[in-house]
Image 1 (cartoon, rainbow over the protein chains, first blue to last red):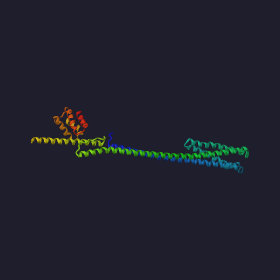
Image 2: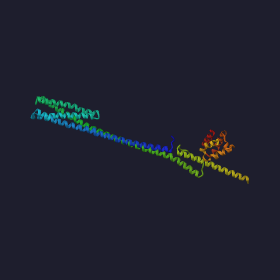
Image 3: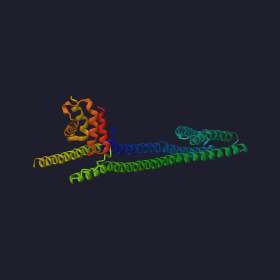
Image 4: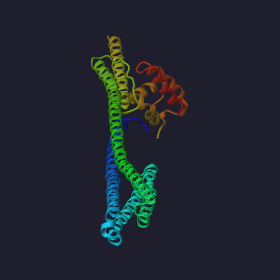
Length: 282
Length: 72
């Protein structure tokens, strides 16, 4: 391709346009990524956090109901206490189980998934300890076996409480992780956008400098040549600086100067011949 | 097209509006009418053109003009 002024200008502006398009693409990509990260944070982080809080609430409620069962069963009778408190506690346990399973499905990493899976494992132990304590209290209300079962149940309840707290922290961690992802994406996008903008600016400056030189240097030279020719100096050399429109102009100018030189020589020759002929007739 | 017209076409990018007058003068030195110019005259015409053109253009251009005429 011949590097004419038109092509040089097209290449220069095309390059700048490409860079502008790159900056716009980085901007669009950043907005999409940030929106996605923000949505993920809202959806997963907040959901996990609220599930963890719900688990804690149900856990406390289950423990309160179980404690009430043990305290009130003497007063209300086994059947009534079971219907009023124990069945409710069992319902709370099932709620925790269902919430923990939902959390496992939502958890974005294996580590967080494991934390919520531990709730289910601990819950099974809690349920077993509760049943053992209930059975022991039925058979031997104040015996050592009942006390041991009660202690075991309280230990399981404490353990479940701790594990549920871990789940709450994990939910918070997920929200935090996504927040950090948003920060990282926005910083990376900012760096990319600034980088592309600076590169665009440098390229635009370099392209402007090269184009200005490509146009101005031969134009200055042609102006100097035209100035000399107009003052009668035809011996000045016309240089062709580039293979573009200005180069073509320099070539035309060279042709014109050559023709002027020739016609001037012709005139001088004709004058000399005329003078010679005039001298001969005298 | 006559040989002279062809030579004019070849020399015009070098000499512009002076082409006809320049070549007429070289033909005069060759002692041949422009219309009577033949391919046999071209070697001599190239040599004459080179010498004459050296006075009005740079040597490289004059050499190039001579080569073009000689190669016709």
